[in-house]
Amino acid sequence: MAALREAALRKLRRFSELRGKPVAAGEFWDIVAITAADEEQALAYKQQLSEKLKRKELPLGVQYHVFADPAGTKIGNGGSTLCSLQCLERLYGDKWNSFLVLLIHSGGYSQRLPNASTLGKIFTAFPLGEPIYQMLELKLAMYMDFPSHMRPGVLVTCADDIEVYSVGDSEYIAFDQPGFTALAHPSSLAVGTTHGVFVLDSAGYSQHGDLEYRQCHRFLHKPSVENMHRFNAVHRQGSFGQQDLARGDTACLPLHTEYVYTDSLFYMDHKSAKKLLEFFESVGPLNCEIDAYGDFLQALGPGATAEYTENMSHVTEEESQLVDMRRKIFHLLKGTPLNVIVLNNSRFYHIGTTEEYLLHFTSDSMLKSELGLQSIAFSVFPNVPGCLSERSCVIHSILDSGCCVAPGTVVEYCRLGPEASIGENCIISSCVIAKAVLPAYSFVCSLSVKINGHLEYSTMVFGTQDNLKNSVKTLTDIKALRFFGVCFLSCLDIWNLKATEELFSGNKAHLSLWTARIFPVCPSLSESVTASLGMLSALRSRSPFSLSNFKLLSIQEMLVYKDVQDMLAYREKIFLEISSNKKQSVLEKS
Image 1 (spheres, helix red, strand yellow):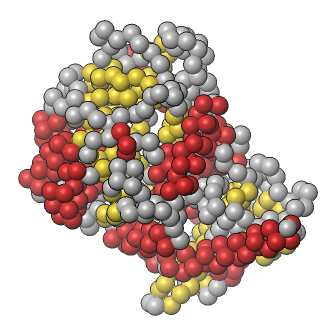
Image 2 (image 1 turned 120 degrees about the horizontal axis):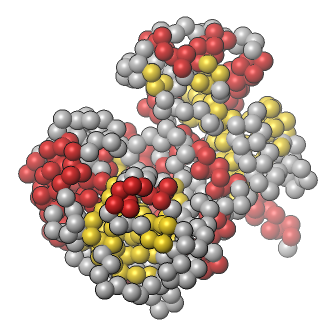
Image 3 (image 1 turned 90 degrees about the vertical axis):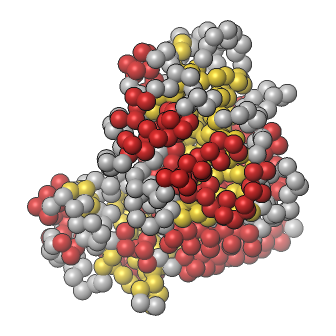
């Protein structure tokens, strides 16, 4: 762990030195491109990038772009990759064949971590740095060493994961081979069932160290344990020393334990990227969801077969064109090499759910230690015993001396008054709370919304363990939905709301907490928080709290109506107040 921490902190220091400064040629990425689910999300991303550049939080002299998926059918991160390549070609013509491109997939609305949905998962705040690092800066920092050892091409990664790795003093990761090159991390077989797994070509290979350059015979996408064994993807620990081959926060694998190598990011050289682009331009607009990992990487390596093209077990929506599209991609990429950079001393962390978020930010997680995450980051807080637990996490917030934050809770972009008491394992985001007692496992997140030109506010509340993605097809089935552990139909009775189709926004064939119009719209941020907490309080006391006189929004609608500029202005106001407070403290000490 010490080597991982040292390596991560070195990269963070290097990135910190580049923030707000022009980069030298070959020192950093030529282009950083972020994908968005639609034009609306793309606009929010562009506004935030613009603010970051103004505040000199990112390296300068780099082209930062946001590419929106086309309207209509969901196209997946594979489709987004193809569209992004087309955007690059249109913007730069042949020039992009000499560029180092970082492509970060950040489309989608993070239904399992809704505070990341408000302004995008790539802008998720971390308890680190001044000003606060968001996921974008963290990714750029962790990839600091890549550009100087990379040939022109595209590095593809996702916005909700982090790779931490260490290599020898004289070693470095090089993306300089033709075809595709992927990072591989040792993982348990259980982790392998939910990720991509590499079947490595072991012919004549005997060297083992922190860093290995290997060839992949074939790539398995979310395979069963049986198939991992069947295709010889399984290794046994102990063959090359007692290294810790844990992945993320999974338990350390004991000696002689079986493990596999799983995927994270991958690189494609310019020739391969161009081949995909020409293919995309020949097939025209996409009508199905393509997975950059499952559909691109499974076609690679000498052992690849077309068998996977008809496997629909990991497909969210089965489209008639998908099998045909997969076959075409398979024949296009067949024979292309898949190089694998094995990182034996590495971890891969996913932060895409409320559970993962709370675990990494509030417990003694390995990620917290490796990145030096803080319990209190860029905040004004009372130095009063018992007010804050060591296991709570406060980011970019102002807390009054009388407030109380219990262990296991994250507070970000908030103002908490003297009579605010937050229970355990809560996530509180962008709220103003003067006086309230929040029960354990509460999720509370406020948004500025603009409806018909009027600026108003709405606050979503639910339980951190609620499943917002869980949907039913008919109104008679909504009793199967659970809000803070309570039958949703019972909740509607307490709130004086009727179970009608009008209660839900969007697709009426998928009724869920995500689309339920139950959150009050109010003229001020504090009123909005008070109204939504009233809903929660009524559930706990089983006393009526009528919502029938409020204008109500679903989470889905909040994201459509969100006023990004006002939300950023709110954060900026807190930023200036914290900065002023910190300067005052320094003056008082001197």
